[in-house]
Amino acid sequence: MLLAGQVLEVLLGGLLSGVLYSLVALGFVLIFKASGVFNFAQGAMVLLAGLALVRCLDYLTHHQVPAWAAVALALTFAAAIMALTAWLVERFVLGPLVNQDGLTLFMSTIGATFVLEGASQMIFGSDVYPLRLFPTDAWIVGDNIFPGGILINKLDVWGGLIAGVLVAGLAIFFQNTKTGRALRAVADDHAAAQSVGIPISWIWFVVWLVAGLVALVAATVWGTKLGVQFSITFLALKALPVLIIGGFTSVPGAIVGGLIVGAGEK
Image (tube, rainbow, N blue to C red; front, side, top):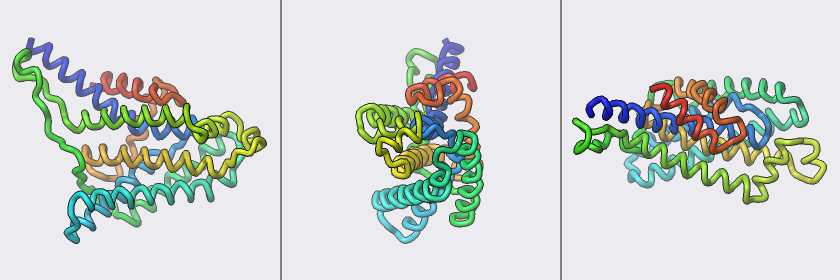
């Protein structure tokens, strides 16, 4: 029974860790599904969102703003930074490249990655900043069945719940809203979408804004787990096998791929 408990604990830990990878992968899926662009800058967006959040939170806490108000204001500030980033990317990176091939658009996101990483560290600093928005201790369950019980990290559970809410929300957004359907039309054919009156610039702004907000959510969880630091950008590499397994256009597939990668990693 001891061995069975250890195996189950490792498996559950891997599955829950995989869901955290899915949070990053969702940003890739969202932009690729809506615009046909593989966004290499998603990891840098997680870094930017995390730094904006934690630095604003530190400033407000230092000035003795109540904790609940400080968190709300810091999240609002970080969301505004991601909205500004979405506008700048659409205006100066993707806007001039409408109707270009996918490789050109992909290369433009690589350039955006370096700009975002440099700007993030220049504005907010390059230290490791701790972030504590979620509990990080563990539950002990099944101790009446398995000797010593099974440890389940509360942060991983929170990440799983958040990922589930995001998947449900994004699925509804793409399938049941006019904007979601327009996003899919743009991904299929830019020129055809323009010919029927779909504003490409607005659609790209919306999809990068939503991807930025998804990056902010990922930053809150990963920042609590690892601290907000430059290496958080490498989470994008963890998302690649998730995307390959789950598919570049499937929101539920990102979760399934994350579960498989997380379990396999453990």
